[in-house]
Length: 268
Image (cartoon, rainbow, N blue to C red; front, top):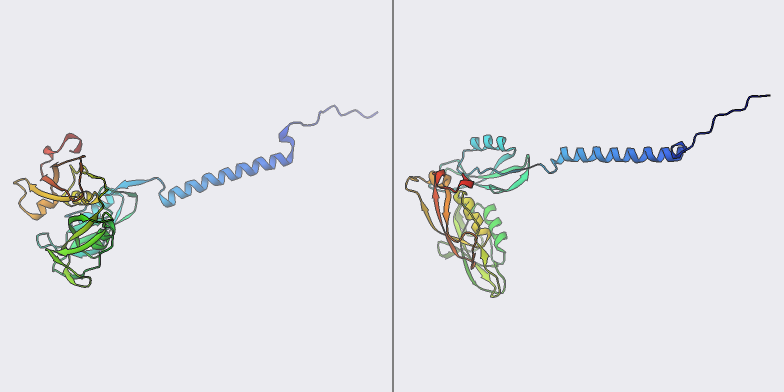
């Protein structure tokens, strides 16, 4: 008589080939997702950001060196003419200093040209304040004083002037000129809050005030600041109304120094 097979058949869920194949497929999908996420992080530098350095008043060579240290790139895209500023040094940048960007992002620079040039004045009437600022920067012009008058739309541009004279669209103005804007202010608009600009250089502080629909008032420099280049490197150590609510167009006085010892401890 043949010997009876006493081995018991395999049992359990893993003995089913359909289940095993499904589990292998799930594991493969998970692995592919992990690889894709890793590749996305490498390609797009996902979640890897840096703070934009301040390139103002530097030469282009100095800016390239600082950019390498800050893990960003720089490109000169425009020029203006500022009489008191050194030829070829950086006057403005975009994105602004202190902004957060992805590593490797290019920062666009506006440098001071050797000779003045003229640009065509755009039509800013009907633009919002932010749109007008962007258009002025694109044309190599500078936002000057913000004048507010009652209107149904807050921060709607109603008039554009240079040195008190209305400038029409298409007029030629010297690159770098300050353009003053008359803007609307709704009667039910709430006050704006004055930002804290301690530790910022002058141009960055001005931008921060304009972001809140405020003006620069008196600017007082320490006595050891003798040149325009010095003033571009000076930082704010004292200001008016920091953190307080104020009406649109309020002038904020700034005090600037080259002495870091005057700054609060957290800003040194």
